[in-house]
Image 1 (cartoon, rainbow, N blue to C red):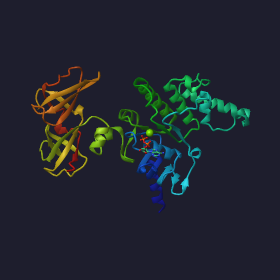
Image 2 (cartoon, rainbow, N blue to C red):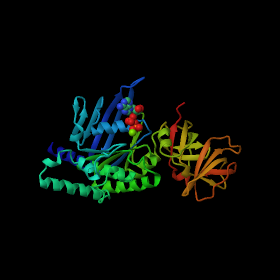
Image 3 (cartoon, protein in one colour):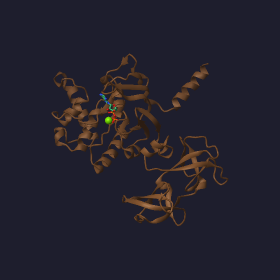
Image 4 (cartoon, rainbow, N blue to C red):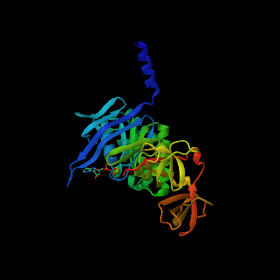
Length: 389
Ligand code: ADP
Ligand code: MG
């Protein structure tokens, strides 16, 4: 019996520890003309020290979920835990200031009438400074200086938020959220108001900073590139539910359904059917671009069953031979380009996208040949979805 206990303990030790878990959380807002079911049973597990992105379209319930985690609102049902501590459950609500969770809200994060240092100090508690001993006051000033140093704004303590750029304001908001050394920090679309260049720069800075501090972070965003490039875990939200959670690579390569696939990148969806092909390890599907090894994401893979084969534009190439296609239009992005095609010599077949390197883009109306790039028999990562007809 005792031996078993030890083994159980070791198994627990080997698993990554869970910083935050959300189970079956629902939230409906009374609204006209009908109540809005903002969360419909959300499950989410956040590993300690991870950077998790919650990715979903506007209105899918991201802010509502963060507000429930922070304690600004109560779930209608379900449970939220920080490690082993229950923060919210039926009949139980831990107030926000007792949760040990920091938040950088979506908008209007800073108090305009307070200096930068006072804003950061607010995160340390809103007690009256006068009632503090000289020593406590010094410790507080040191902590504020340390936080401003951390976010790269050591000289800015006396300024007002209105005298800072958008990116600097977000860094102050982050310093304020990190001030009390929270177990988890929540960031609600922190970069969405910034222009593209600044956004990319600040993203990297924030990631590096959070890594240094070692705080578990949850970032909410509707920007798939941001989620995939920044986070080590991504949870996809849709209509008040987390519909898939995995590593960024896992979600991109093996999306749970065609909607998720299209939400996190460009897709080529071709009707096909499962076939037996001695050259390609099963399962294998036949589509307009030939036979391709597929990863099952729905359906049984039974021979001749219909399916949809999902390919990414970078898995295709324009070549000397392949399926005939007409160029519909092209886009040049500098680092690469996208060619929009329709299969068939007359361009009446299914639409297809090809990502191409360099600046040799064909012209609209050109007749080209398109094929799956690489060694198909080695298994091109093409998820196959069963056809829901
Ligand atoms: P997101 O942050 O993903 O854009 P939200 O969580 O803000 O989405 O909102 C989810 C849904 O809940 C939306 O339909 C929104 O209109 C609704 N909603 C959010 N807060 C309230 C509220 N206080 N009262 C009524 N409806 C709300
Ligand atoms: Mg929101």
